[in-house]
Amino acid sequence: MMKVPFSYLERQFADPTEYFNDIRVLLEGMDLTLGTEVEKFENRFAEFIGLPHAVGVGSGTDALILPLRLLGIGNGDEVITAANTFIATAGAIVATGAVPVFVDSEDGFVIDPSKIEAAISPATKAIIPVHYTGNMADMPAIMEIADRHNLLVIEDACQAIGAQLTGTPVGSWGHCAAFSLHPLKNINVWGDGGLVLTSDADFAEELRLYRNHGLVGRDHVEMFGVNSRLDSLQAVVGNRLIPDAGSITERRIKVAERYDAAFAQLGPEITVPKRRDGVRHVFHLYIIRATKRDELHAYLVDQGIEAKVHYPIPIHMQQAARSLGYKAGSFPNTEFDAANSITLPAHQHLTDKEIEHTIRQVTKFYRG
Ligand SMILES: *Cc1c(COP(=O)(O)O)cnc(C)c1O
Image 1: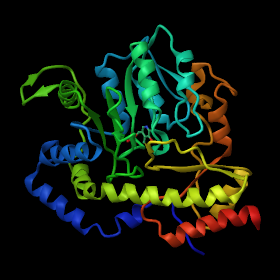
Image 2: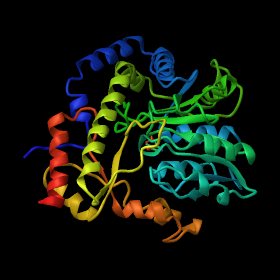
Image 3: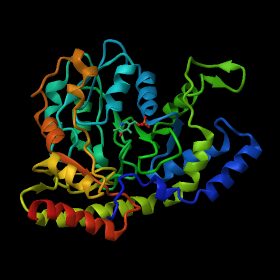
């Protein structure tokens, strides 16, 4: 039976020799916190995305928490974000002392801008649009609302490395953007890591202080900070990988295009989400809507195709969110997608054969 794995780690790092050589060099220099590897990776990542400043931090979650705190968001504040996202977006807001206020998603699984204004209150300080699945949220519409209500915008770009909207890079719409290097993200390292990208040079400098105890040199503390540095060892891994960022992104897009074309033809059982004009969607997750989702999911897994569900329980229905006061029916689109969407393996290491096999098995499930 052909196996189609969801994770690409085993294939990606099948031969780690060059990585080990680089790590040996790092160890010879003993440059183990921050240092030249981190600086080099920050510069190359910023260049790949198309923004001037990148600050490496401990994780994608920290890449949301640190800017929120530096921008003065905390107790008594509300931050609007997407109901349909990975838990970390909401968790980061809660970690600052602020309250997450959710807004339902639209057809492409990103925040519906037409529903944002109804969620704004006198306590609202910021909006965190999530470029969920690698699709770009409608940033012009979101920035227009944010400007009119004087709200900060921080983009959650953890799933959207390399995405663009009408040629403008992800992360350049809001005040800053959070990226993740988690092993299952499009550009990944051997553990945790994240970056904040911004066009604001002063803000980038503040972040550099804040992530490293506010230290200037050894003896001077300019502000109280935290320890959330991008690990130097992970930066070594990132530096080995970043030259491939373009080809990884392009291959993911190609795989998704092949799936889209096949599933558009399959029939009413599968619905491909709308692909908005002008969006360079980078397909961190390839999600479609499917009738008899749970049966299809079980069938595919049985056939060795490692399909997933992102996510079966929406955040507002989680035990952790009970004090926020939402209920079933609060976000109909997010809830519908939790019950009816399926994620197929769609990464850069899949072969054409595996892709065609996956398409054939989905078709076979419905057509026999
Ligand atoms: C992965 C992810 C994060 C958090 O990233 P970590 O590096 O795992 O902390 C935040 N938001 C979204 C949408 C993510 O997918």
